[in-house]
Amino acid sequence: MPAFPETFLWGTATAAYQVEGAWNEDGRGPSIWDTFSHTPGLVTGGDTGDVACDHYHRLEEDLDHLAALGVGAYRFSISWPRVQPGGRGPVNGPGLDFYQRLVDGLLARDIAPVGTLYHWDLPQELEDAGGWPNRDTARRFAEYARLMGEALGDRVRTWITLNEPWCSAYLGYASGVHAPARTEPAAALAALHHLNLGHGLAVQALRSTAAKGAQMSVTLNLHHVRGVSERDADAVRRADGLANRAFLGPMLEGAYPRDLIADTASVTDWSFVRDGDEATACQPLDVLGVNYYNPTLVRQWDGDGARETADGHQDGATSPWIACEDIEFVKQPGPYTEMGWNIDETGLTELLLRLHRDYPDLPTMITENGAAFPDQVSPDGRVRDLDRVDYLHRHLSAVNEAITAGADVRGYFVWSLMDNFEWAHGYAKRFGILRVDRETMERTWKDSAHWYRDVVAAGKLPS
Image 1 (cartoon, rainbow, N blue to C red):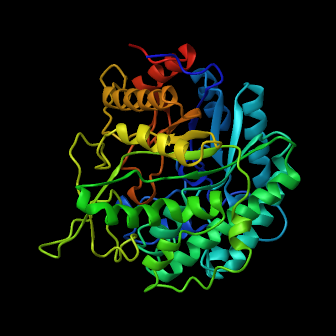
Image 2: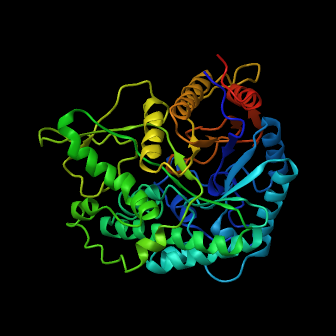
């Protein structure tokens, strides 16, 4: 297998609420995930992100781990309620100072900071005012982006506006398995639009405040949708429209797909889309962030028996797949990660090549890829997570294959740097290449971390 390009960016990633802790320190306001995790019965084990990995207090230690890994970049997210507690008004100085120290610490170690503005922790005050279904939230997001561009834009050269708006809209407002736990399909589609609009407004704000030449991006968890048979082509089209083209259309083409609007007409008339919104959402990007874990398999439901809903997401009171009641999400063959997701790296190659065909002038980077497994600590203290090593090897091979076939893939970020708060699963699922002891917060390098360090140093996969 050929080596990766010399300019290929190797990194790892985390998200603020999953690692920082310090949930009510130094002026930080509550987020929707504080509210969600503090609500009994919503998170496995009653876990919360109150302490998480205590990254807020262990910043220097974690920066040293990044340096030892040899990565060229670190993707982190900014906690909106830490720097702007209510989602509006002036910056909270102590909260901003944490990110100043984070960025400066990365640069001092020759690691490029990749800043994500929104990884799901909406200030609770904005949710109380309507949340993402409320158009004003997009405006508030743009103002927050402007403030961060002014504060950090001289040093952060790659900005990601949103992480996985699919999850924010559909899991947060349709199925309710993520914060803010609402089950309102029409509101979810309004949220989808205002996330797209907020993205465009945020790119405009960042371009006006960040350093000239800063790269603009968004991270999408695009679904590689396959049909069980050729008879399922329409099911594939509809699922693809809801999962992928609902974001790719406005962000990259300046228009929502007409078939998506027709498919969801029974739920909403899309009157929340105003003249000029789609053009605003469609801002020039320098690179598209892609999160990939596994493909999606669908078929048309014939109405007999129970409908399969094995989409890889938790079952909620309603489905995140709006207006797809006659589509089945079929359980795929193993092997599986601990999340129950099948391991199929071919979907990543195919997805990257699709993006290359559809948007040949837009480079991509893998902003998340990884796996949860039931890691065990050996008597000698090692975590021999060979299943994770195998997973990462498979998927990096898939990226390499896509590059060889012509796709312009600029980088790869392992999810995640360390075991953390895995949203509604609490601390039950471990994705990290560093193990975090829940009692002591001690970080231990798993075998996958040693393996990844060697891959980064060599710029190629071992045979």
